[in-house]
Length: 83
Figure 1 (tube, rainbow, N blue to C red):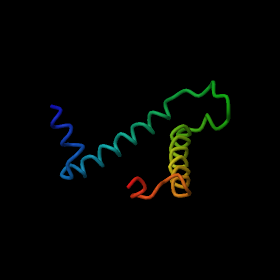
Figure 2 (figure 1 turned 120 degrees about the vertical axis):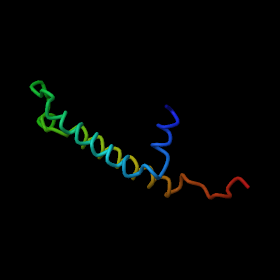
Figure 3 (figure 1 turned 90 degrees about the vertical axis):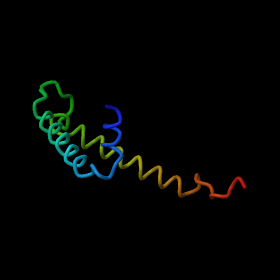
Figure 4 (figure 1 turned 45 degrees about the vertical axis):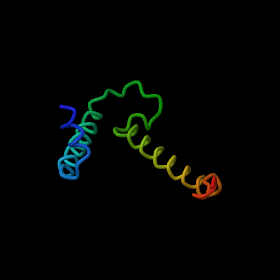
């Protein structure tokens, strides 16, 4: 059983099926977000469907770009630094 799961997520043979599975799960999550009651939202943007996903995605992208910027501006060492 575990071998089949590892093969599904590791082999290029199943790439199209993985992509379809990803899109189906994505559509289900977005559809489920429309079913959540939002009467007790504190801020106006909390009432928008999909706001938490968009905020999380934007935060993740920003975190990646900031870390890349910091890494290339002095935190990263040359490959042969310890030699």
